[in-house]
Length: 346
Image 1 (spheres, rainbow, N blue to C red):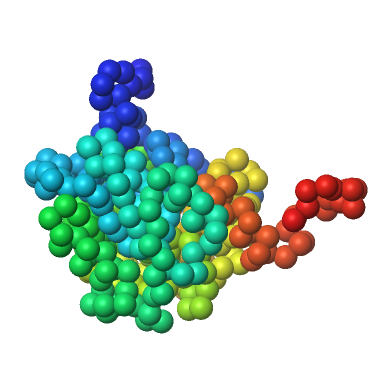
Image 2 (tube, helix red, strand yellow):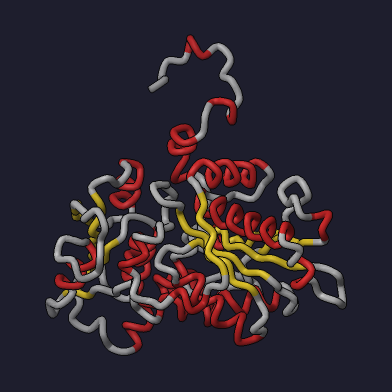
C-alpha cells in the first residue's frame, strides 16, 4: 500500500480507517513490563497514530459516514454532542467531509482551558453546561439530555455516542481485526479504558467471536479520581450500552498512577496520554492479581508458553502537559538550571 491520498476525496479517504494500513502495535520492553520474566508479552495498540491522533477518530468517522449512507444527513446544518475532547473535534472534522460545517458541543463547567482552546481551534462551538453531581441520560440538566433534545430539530443531528451502535461497530469492523491479525490470533488478554465503552465493546465483540477464552479487562477511574476520557463507575450511568456484558474484570485506577505510567511510556518512545497510562495500570494490576492467586498459568498457551496482552493507547500526552505537573510531584521531573533568569515563567 502506497499510503497516498489524491483527488477530490483525498481528505475523506485520509480520515477513513478502511483506507489505511494497520495502526502500529508496539511491544513493551522489560523496563515497562514487570511480567517479562513470567513470559508475558504486552503490546500497546497505538490509536494515537490515527490521522487525527486519537482513538475517537475511528468511531467518529464511522458514525458520521453511516448517517450519510442512510441519508440522515440530508438537511442537517449542524451536529450537536455532549463531549469536551477528542470525540467532538473528530466528529467536527469528519462531518465537514460530508457537508456539515457546524458542530456544537455541550461541555462541563469544569472543562480545562486547554481543552476549551482545542475545541475552538478545531471550530467546535462550545456550550458550557453545569452538569449534575450524578448525571443520568434522562436528567434534563445533563449535557447528554440537552444534546439529544437539540437533535430533535429538523436541521440538527445528535449522533448520540453513548448509545449509537456505530460507535462500537467501528472497532468491531476495523480495529479488532487489526489486533487479531497483528497478534496472529494469539491474544489472551485485551484491556481498554471505559469512557463511552465503544472501544472495549467493539473490540471485545470481534475478539471473543474469534476466541471466547480471551479475557477482557475494563479499566476505569477510581472513585473521586480524574483521568480525561475515562469514567468512574457512577459516571458510566449515562452510557446506554450494556458494557458489563463484555467485561470479564473491572480494574479501578487512580489519577497519579495513570499519569506516571503515561509519562514513563512517553519517555521510552511510546507517546501515550493519561488514559493510555490508566489502561496499562489496569492491565498490570489484573496480571498481578492473577499471579498472586496462581491463575496466570491458566492463560498461558501450551504451544509457546507465552501470554499475550494488548492494551489501547487512545491518544498522546501533549494536550494534557499542564496536568502532569498538577497531578505528579516535582520528583518526577528534572530540575531547571538557572530558573531564576527565565523571562516567560508563568
